[in-house]
Image 1 (cartoon, rainbow, N blue to C red):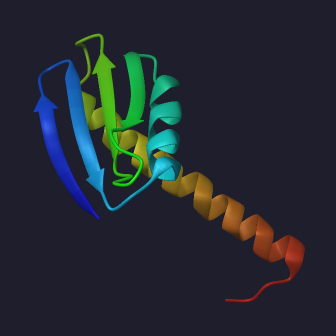
Image 2: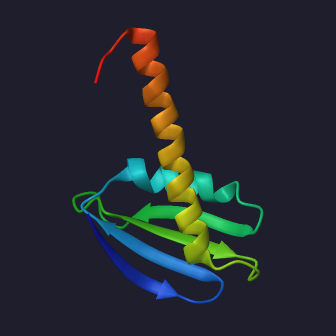
Length: 95
Protein backbone atom coordinates (compact mmCIF):
# COMPACT_ATOMS: atom_id res chain seq x y z
CA UNK A 1 0.00 0.00 0.00
CA UNK A 2 1.21 3.46 -0.85
CA UNK A 3 -0.07 6.53 1.01
CA UNK A 4 -0.10 9.80 -0.93
CA UNK A 5 -0.77 12.99 1.00
CA UNK A 6 -2.95 15.26 -1.11
CA UNK A 7 -3.52 17.98 1.48
CA UNK A 8 -2.54 18.56 5.09
CA UNK A 9 -3.46 21.54 7.26
CA UNK A 10 -4.13 21.95 10.96
CA UNK A 11 -7.80 21.06 10.32
CA UNK A 12 -7.80 18.87 7.22
CA UNK A 13 -6.05 15.78 5.91
CA UNK A 14 -6.64 14.30 2.47
CA UNK A 15 -4.81 11.09 1.59
CA UNK A 16 -4.98 8.58 -1.22
CA UNK A 17 -4.44 4.89 -0.46
CA UNK A 18 -2.98 3.48 -3.66
CA UNK A 19 -3.76 -0.17 -4.22
CA UNK A 20 -6.61 -0.35 -1.71
CA UNK A 21 -10.38 -0.34 -2.22
CA UNK A 22 -13.70 0.68 -0.69
CA UNK A 23 -13.22 -1.59 2.30
CA UNK A 24 -10.47 0.37 4.01
CA UNK A 25 -11.76 3.74 2.81
CA UNK A 26 -15.18 3.09 4.29
CA UNK A 27 -13.76 1.71 7.54
CA UNK A 28 -11.52 4.72 8.16
CA UNK A 29 -14.18 7.28 7.23
CA UNK A 30 -16.92 5.68 9.34
CA UNK A 31 -14.68 5.26 12.38
CA UNK A 32 -13.32 8.80 12.09
CA UNK A 33 -16.88 10.13 12.22
CA UNK A 34 -17.23 8.80 15.76
CA UNK A 35 -14.32 10.97 16.95
CA UNK A 36 -15.69 13.92 18.95
CA UNK A 37 -13.47 16.49 17.21
CA UNK A 38 -14.17 15.37 13.64
CA UNK A 39 -16.52 17.57 11.64
CA UNK A 40 -16.34 15.63 8.37
CA UNK A 41 -14.91 12.28 7.32
CA UNK A 42 -15.55 10.72 3.94
CA UNK A 43 -13.91 8.87 1.13
CA UNK A 44 -14.30 8.74 -2.62
CA UNK A 45 -12.99 6.56 -5.39
CA UNK A 46 -12.11 8.87 -8.24
CA UNK A 47 -12.35 6.23 -10.96
CA UNK A 48 -13.85 2.73 -10.70
CA UNK A 49 -11.01 1.14 -12.67
CA UNK A 50 -8.38 2.66 -10.41
CA UNK A 51 -10.13 1.85 -7.16
CA UNK A 52 -7.82 3.74 -4.79
CA UNK A 53 -9.81 5.58 -2.10
CA UNK A 54 -9.20 9.24 -1.30
CA UNK A 55 -9.97 9.86 2.37
CA UNK A 56 -10.75 13.30 3.77
CA UNK A 57 -10.81 14.06 7.50
CA UNK A 58 -11.72 17.54 8.74
CA UNK A 59 -11.50 18.39 12.44
CA UNK A 60 -12.65 21.35 14.51
CA UNK A 61 -9.02 22.48 14.75
CA UNK A 62 -8.43 21.36 18.33
CA UNK A 63 -6.97 18.03 17.19
CA UNK A 64 -4.57 17.29 14.35
CA UNK A 65 -6.33 15.24 11.65
CA UNK A 66 -3.21 13.05 11.35
CA UNK A 67 -3.60 12.16 15.02
CA UNK A 68 -7.24 11.27 14.39
CA UNK A 69 -6.19 9.00 11.53
CA UNK A 70 -3.65 7.30 13.78
CA UNK A 71 -6.26 6.76 16.50
CA UNK A 72 -8.70 5.32 13.97
CA UNK A 73 -6.13 2.86 12.63
CA UNK A 74 -5.11 1.75 16.14
CA UNK A 75 -8.76 1.31 17.16
CA UNK A 76 -9.54 -0.60 13.95
CA UNK A 77 -6.64 -2.94 14.63
CA UNK A 78 -7.83 -3.58 18.19
CA UNK A 79 -11.37 -4.35 17.00
CA UNK A 80 -10.06 -6.68 14.30
CA UNK A 81 -7.83 -8.51 16.78
CA UNK A 82 -10.77 -8.95 19.17
CA UNK A 83 -12.95 -10.28 16.36
CA UNK A 84 -10.25 -12.74 15.35
CA UNK A 85 -9.91 -13.94 18.94
CA UNK A 86 -13.68 -14.45 19.24
CA UNK A 87 -13.82 -16.30 15.91
CA UNK A 88 -11.00 -18.59 16.96
CA UNK A 89 -12.76 -19.40 20.23
CA UNK A 90 -16.19 -19.80 18.69
CA UNK A 91 -15.12 -21.82 15.67
CA UNK A 92 -12.31 -23.73 17.38
CA UNK A 93 -9.67 -22.47 14.97
CA UNK A 94 -6.03 -22.72 16.03
CA UNK A 95 -3.14 -20.48 14.99
